[in-house]
Image (tube, rainbow, N blue to C red; front, side):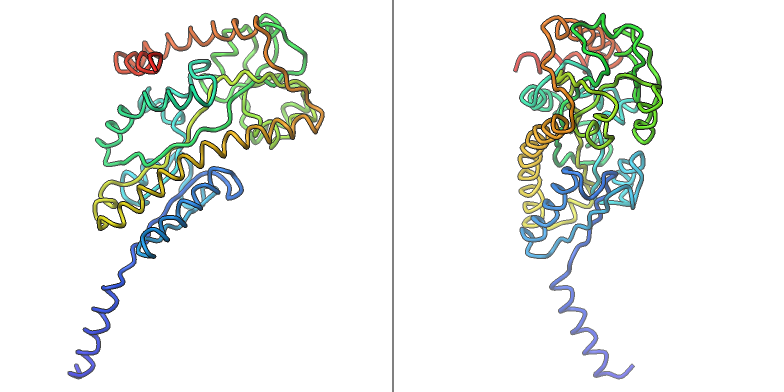
Length: 322
């Protein structure tokens, strides 16, 4: 090797090392236009700025890098340094992941935030055992009841064809005496158009995205539950960063959490306005309907706590004391 060339090469390597840039991937299952993804994109930009360009995060939206069920394992195994998951999707792995999917346990943004504070220590402990850090969470808009006819109580849902898309939604249908029919979101418009379903529970955003207002004219704003998305981080990848870069990640995450919850509240109001504009009536549930649905919630909390054991009971108790 030419001696001069060798020295030049060493010099080049050193100067590159001084400006070493770390590149991370962040897969999410939601489209780029979704408010969760927009919030994540802002988080990535804040990390870039806060770390002085040392850490670059690439956001892979719409399940383009990993499909929704693969994201948690990808972060755990280090194939991706970060990832976004919907916590309730992992309830079969561990009951506590489903705490924010129990209907009528936390029925407002304030209550959902308190439930998160009660759930957080056990979530962090469990994820730490799997080599994962819980960076932040953001709640989805609250879930209500879309239904063809007007309802004053749960009895009015008896025999109604009810869309089920998860164990919890199927169970609610059973408890109110409706007829649960399994329909995924992609087939929802078709199922409503053909009368396969007459009612379902979801957020205003799903109602708007699927043009539910073309088939169903009533939405009861029960705020039944507010499921959360969580941003997870691989612990080894985080430990490999220098202290200032770690601080930049944590600061950007704290900002993203606050901004995300505020954004969710704002979006919820916007979606309900859009439903009204398109001819849907948004109802405040009657006292009777509220009481009936609370009974359904009590049964489901009891069932969940039996499965989740003492740990689940402790989280529910801590939440109720807040």
